[in-house]
Length: 523
Image 1 (cartoon, rainbow, N blue to C red):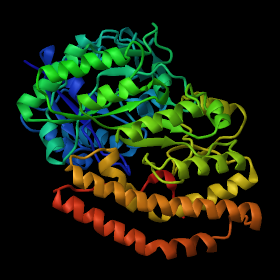
Image 2: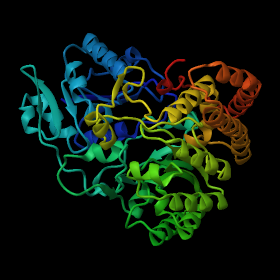
Image 3: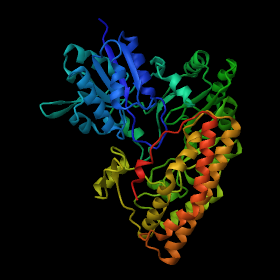
C-alpha cells in the first residue's frame, strides 16, 4: 500500500501578496521519486483557511503524515492546521520545517508538532517519513528536533545539499494558480549567501551544519532545462529567481554570458527577477543579464552611511551601492532597494546622510521612508542586543524589538513610523506589482512606477520636515499633531493613488490580497 503524505502551508499574516511556496514543490518531488503518494496544498497561494486546507487533504486516501512549511508569522495558523488534522484524521504525525521552526523549535514542539526539521529538508524528509511510518527511533534521523519525556531532543545537523543538480525539479501542483494570479513563477538557481550581514537569517539558517557549503549553485544547463520545461508545458515567460544571492563567485560576467547564450540558443523570450548584492555588479554583468531577460531585482543597499553599513557588517560600501544604483538606473532595471534606516545606534547625522542620497538617487523603489532593522531570532544582531540587555519582547512584531538609543534619532523614528503606518496599505499595494512582481504590460509597469514616484516624493518631503523639526524646533516626537496634520494634508494623494492602482489591477485581472503591515503595529 502506497502511503499518502500531505504537504501544506497556511497563510501568514502578511502585507505581501501570496506567491507559490517552492519548498512544497521540492519536498513533493523528492517524496514522489521515492514512491510516496503526495498531496500538496498551498494555503497561502490559494487563500485557504486552515480547515479548508485539511479538507483538501481528505480527498481520496487519508494522509498518513502531514508536513507543514512554516514561518514565524504563521505559527497561529500552523497550530490551527495541526488541530484540524488531528480532528479529521486522528493522532497522525504532523511535522514542520522552514525558517520559523528552525529558529523557534521549542515553540513548535510545545505546540504539538511531532518533529521539527532544522535547515534544508529535502535530504531529511524521506528518512524522517520512513522512521515515523515504521516506528524507528527519531534519534537516528539527522537534523530534527522532537519532544521526548518533556524534553526537546535535537539530533545533529546534517550537511547542506552540496550538488543542487541532484535534486528533482519541484512538483508544480500550484503553478496554474500562480499563473492565474499574475505571479512570476518561482525558480531557485542557488542557495545560501557568502555575505555575513549581522541582521540576516540566511547565514544563521545553515549555522551549526557541518561542511563549508554556504553558497551552492545549480549548473546553467540544469537551470535552463527547468525554464524550458515550464515554458513548454505551461507557457511560462516570467520567472522570479528566488535565490538569496543570485551572483556569488564563480558567477561573474563570463557565467552571465554563458547563461545568456544558453537562453538564446533555445529561443526563450523570458523576463526574470533576481536578488543581488551591490558589490557583485559591474557593467558587463548588468548588460548581459539585461539581454537575457533581466527585468527587475532587489538589492540590499540598506543604508547610505558607511558607519551604519559597518555596524551591519555589510560587505558592500556606500561607493559600491551608488555604483550599483547608477548601473541599474542606466539600464532601466526596476530595482527594489532594501533599506534599513533605523537600528539601535542610528544617529541624526546618518539620517541626514540618508535623506541626501535618497533625494539624489530616485530610481530605486523602497518600501517607504520608514524602515528598521528586524531583530530576528538566531541572527548575530539579535544575539548582540540580547547580551547588552537591549531587546524587548513585542507580540505585535512576532519577534523582538528595541529602542533607538540616540534621543533625537528616536524622535525621528517615532514620527516617520506613524507617518508610514497611516498609509502603508496603499503604499504596499502600489509597489506590489514591481516588487513581488506581477505580470503586467510594459506601459502598466511604467504607470505603477510613476505612481510610486509620487508617493516617494511625499515621503522625502515629510522626512526633511521631520529632521528640521527635531533639530531646529525641538519637537520631541511624542505630540502626534504634526504627523496627523501632515497625513490629513496628503490624504487626497493617497486616495487618488489607491483609485489608480485599483484600476490597473482590475484591468489586468489582478487581485491584491494582503493585510496591513503587521510589523508597524497600531497607532
